[in-house]
Length: 592
Image (cartoon, rainbow, N blue to C red; front, side, top):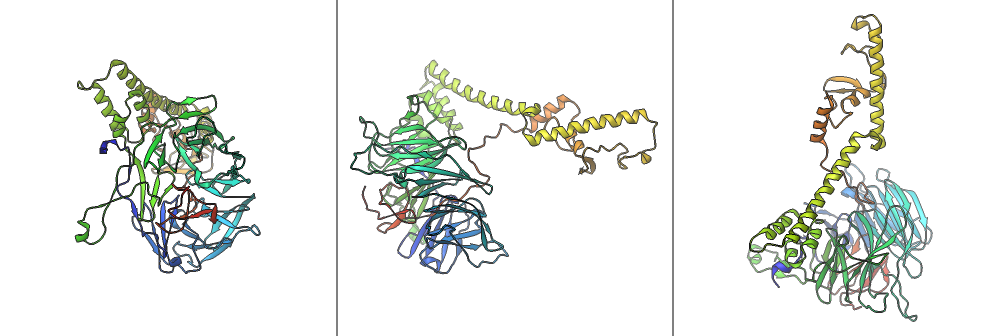
């Protein structure tokens, strides 16, 4: 298979860390994308590495028992370590603050902590088998304050840092999921929903496993992905991925079904809004795009793979060591290894080799793998870094050697024009809100009201000035000594811009009809239009659903090393019921 056939690849510069072994335990923090290598419980050192960290973080801590979970808060200011099922230890990494550890036990009596998640730099959530507890960390006081709690039986949990949503598995079958949303010190309970389990004989007791669930943001919307190993229909035995849309308001709804048409061991990633499904048995992957047209049955849309199944592009591991040793040929990496662990959205980790990769999509090979130019254009227009590839497609269609038919060319350019029109419409809508105050948000509307009040006050002041005899400027009541004119009393708070003073109405007067500098009033509407065109944003902002102001932190997971038992999350191999704080205890060579 030529290199031009691979449309998936591992990043060129992975994060390298010390391999997992009996002395060194490895953990991963999904939100900060950091790998923790903890040697001898931290007594002989802890090394923290991440894709965006130029310098790794190294420190030591007392060995007070086996570390079950370890994570930094946002900006690496506070370290949280779980060693028991009853409490979490904290240590400040803030300058001029005490680095002595302090401990917080769960409030619920007889409850066991399954894990914890940072939702901001000073807010953390304990998930126990009896509910959820939301705390504020006070590093100066070396203590925690309980903000809110909720009691319910919990089997396992899952956290999506991009959306700050926690899913709690409840009921005996574990298939009723209760979501909670966190933002700015608040915890909101969202409507619970039920995952439809596959049909099974009465003698078989099925339950929803954590390894078959994932959460990811696709096209700005939060989805819960369920890997269903057997279809509920009698005429199909292939596995499928069911996508449940989880909105901020309203009930969760099943929206899409991805048909895999095969059975075995799978793992899921989301890359560039594409759902990537890895199949270990065949060592291949397929991609799905829910924006492309599928088969709609009135309630859900069925999708098939966009492209034929292909393996990830072969990867060569460079040989580390002295210069004489590094001259040796790189070692091929074993793809789809049983020691691979997959995290959302695009993380693949091999703890036995000590590497963390980001999965990437290659667009250029897809041009030759997708013969339908219209569908190809629909696919490319939704991808990042697509401009050069689209230009190459258009150039290829118009070349004499491989010229496409006129209907195909018309279809491709219609799609390009449609996308450009959507951009212009969005830009026009954004400009309309600038010109029509009733479409403005409340802060902008209040600002315009203040400006209008200032204009009215100025008009009245001008009328009084014309009606009364002229007085010396220095003796006028309410006069501004510096300007010689009347001072508008709409607001007592005055501002100074470029050496000139004025109240809020004067400031608003300078920016009422566009985006200008405070000290540059607009002489006429035509000038206002020109100024606004030069300064306005190219397109309106597109906020993501559930997007918090800063990403939050999910549960760290102990990674798996070759031949060693480890606590493993969703991965290519099956696992037995959770044994340690909601994790699955297994070995690499276990079978489904």
